[in-house]
Image (spheres, rainbow, N blue to C red):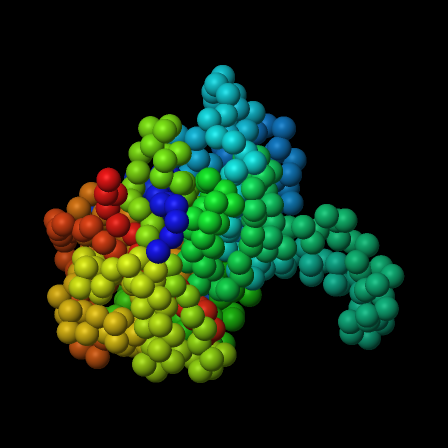
Length: 444
């Protein structure tokens, strides 16, 4: 058990279903899809040509005017994180340096910046291929082959001196902390799709042990680029339903054939309970447990029985001091990849046993695809909204749940239900890291 209680007071989402937690929630309730044919680049040479793209993301809406020059060295992943941070801060009712500098308030900050930390998950940021290709072209020899000596003497000089700063994973947290003046412990976690859960769990620990009173945490990533698409294609993880983009990703469905690349992310404001109460904050729920594990089975394939996932869930429940019988809903990762879904479901069943056929479970990636390092934060945000509203969103494209998975995936229409305690699972598709978080309805 943890010494200080930690609650969720703000959520910021940036996804193909929209920007802002209420927008995403309503889109899920209305069973909308954010998956379309890819337009960010020409996908015609790829086996999978569909994905989730964020529309109308303008950085001037999320940073102070004096900071706009810095947006020129923001990769797409960084932009998503900065926008999600702004949304989370606004949702939490915080008054940070960003809002003051933007002229949105004349009030002074209502938090101590020296007690405001950050933990943000990031993925493998793709370099600007057009910009990089132009520089590489100037480093070929007379026979058209790449020359490392010419690259050192000439090619590199064709990249802006600040070029690398666009693609370092820690720059998500860097920009967010500078814009909002978060001076307490800051960390970046890069563990693929498990990054969000791990970052939120670390923020939870930081507040619980008294190293900060408030943290902004979660993750963001854009796989919406040729390299992101190619990597997943080479690993045979993608759906090829190009003629039916909205129906391509089918988590746990018996006819699933892969996941869909996407972009997006979410950031939370976690806060020590008494501070949140003192400033009259809206509380979505209490974060009560965190567990993590490593999968040493394979670098590219999940453990067939979901051993690591079961271990992470068990640790999270132990940390929360509750039994599996107390859980009202499971927020699955649900990638839509056949082997990954089987591994996850078997790991869940190892913990919950026969109750998995009765506990409602959600799977949101059918609506917006795999958001990489941002996926876990989105999943947890939807879970928090289910707790807040006592309503469970349906999973899109799950028409016939695979009996081998054995989960009670909510399909069809939203379900009204008492949702007090939720377990959210996350894992890296390539094997390695697994994590689980437990949230509860706020209790006095």
